[in-house]
Each structure stands twice: as structure tokens, then as C-alpha cells.
Amino acid sequence: MQDFQKTIWEYYRKHARTLPWRKTRSPYHILVSEIMLQQTQVERVIEKYKKFISAFPDLSSLSRAPLHDVLSIWQGLGYNRRAIALKQIAYEVITKYDGILPSSVDTLIQLPGIGKATASAIAAFAFNQPTVFIETNIRRVFIHCFFQDRGNVKDSELLSLIEEALDQGNPRQWYYALMDYGAMLKKEFINPNRKSWHYQKQSPFEGSQRQLRGMVLRALLQEQKITGTRIINILEKDPNKVKDVIEQLEKEGFIRKERNRYSIS
Image (tube, rainbow, N blue to C red; front, side, top):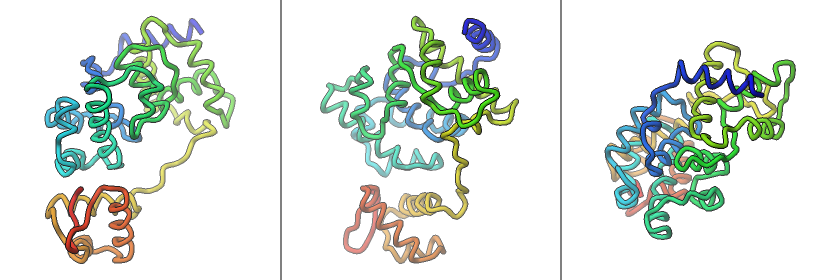
């Protein structure tokens, strides 16, 4: 384990990535980065993160912002539910916690769109707490270093190793180091995460319902108040699929219908 820790720290000292959310100790800014990084590559997040923080520099400004404005900045990141979750988090933190983001993992989990791993990551990066969690790069590092001759490795097998390896005095930097080492492994080796029991190849984006949801939202962002027929004509996609997506978005609170016209909620 000491050799492993030494390897990770040495790599980090030489090759640490310079990322904008690593330059701040603002819990809000770190919250935004962690929500954005869910299921999204670092390279795609960097510019969106900068624009988002510039447009909504604090929890108060985000909580007051129209959803239309939030989604306009978010466009291109995908998984738009995260944008709604961030706005809801901002509102709850302002109204329930006097505008101070909680540092407790148990409390963070209660906020919209935050699961155990994200809550633990926020606690580690924003508050330097020695939490134990797994994300894709961390999983890649431990499988590569400890399970080279195994397949179907479960996260439950990794957790004890992650806890043992954790630098209790400097968890923030340790997790940065692990993630940077994992990012390197993805480029240099056949993805070790394929040996994970939890590994799933991502389904194609082209032609997916997720793509169609994004297209509907973009149409609404451009014209703001339009009919369902107009959306179908703009997209030139299967009308039934478009109608299904519009209904889903309305049920989920993304859009609302007034006098036969749809708009961002």
C-alpha cells in the first residue's frame, strides 16, 4: 500500500492537471463542478463551468435565475435534469440552510440530484473531509493496481482498499491525485474499468431519446413559446416520439403548457 501511495503522489507532483474548480475553496463552485462532472468528461465541463459561474456566481443568483437562463448556459452538457437539480439545490440551501452549503454527507444526500458518491466528493473537495467514495477514475486506478488478473470486480471489493489508501490529513489532494492517475490510465491502457462488475458500455447518443430531449429543449430556448406542431416541424423527427418527449418534459417540470404553447418552466 505504501508503494501504491508513493506511485500516485509522485505522478501527481509531476503531472497534476490544472482545472478551474481546483483553484477555489468555494463550496458552491465545487458543488457546480461535481454536478457537471456527473457522466460528463472533464474537457466538456471546463468551459461550461466557467460560463455558469460567471452567469450565476453564487447560490443566491442561481436560485433567483429563470430556468430558461440556466438551461441556456447548460446547453451542450446533456443530462439537463442536473441543471434543474442545481437550481433546486440553490433554492433549498438559501431557504433551509441560510445560504450555507451543508458539509455533512448525510445532509448533502437530502438535496436534489445528489447521491452518496457526489455528496462524499463534495465533502472531500469543498471541506477536505476524509470521505470514502468511488467514481470512474478512482475505480480505474484500483482495478489496474490491485486486480490486474481479475474480472467482474465489484465496488464493494474496492471500498476497503480506497479507505486504507486514503490520506486522512489531505483527502482533497489525494483524490485529485487518484483522479489524475486514472485519467492517464484511460489514455495509456485498455480501459481497466472493463474488468468492473458494474461496467456498462454507453448506448449510442445519435438517435437516442436523450438526444431528442435536448433537441426539444433547444427549440424552446430559441423560440420560447411555441406549439407542439411547431416543435415537430422544426425537428423533422418522428411526431409520435417528439410528442412523447414533450409529455415527459412537461411531467418532469422542464416545460409548461399555456394555451397550446410550450415554454421552459
